[in-house]
Length: 84
Image (cartoon, rainbow, N blue to C red; front, side, top):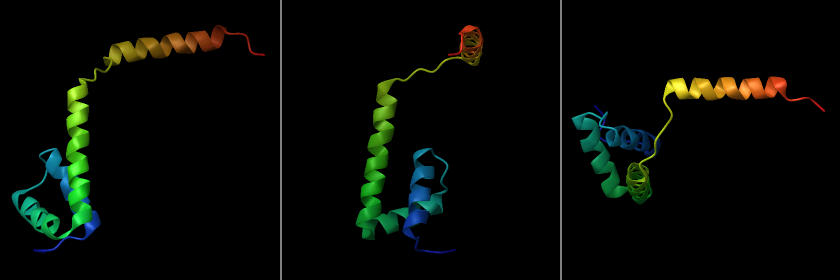
């Protein structure tokens, strides 16, 4: 088991921890890395802000059926529009 992460590994663990996919030891090692690395600390803070902003935006997506219907409509429009 390694006790120090490289910055790119720390970023990966940071991303995983935000989605509750990081293990306990990954988080412990990440916290040790963040204690000494200002760049990764800033990355982690920005990552949290981005997640909060996205969650607060209450984005809604189309259902797969609606996407398919729109895709078919666009395809029909493209087929019926005269080409220059």
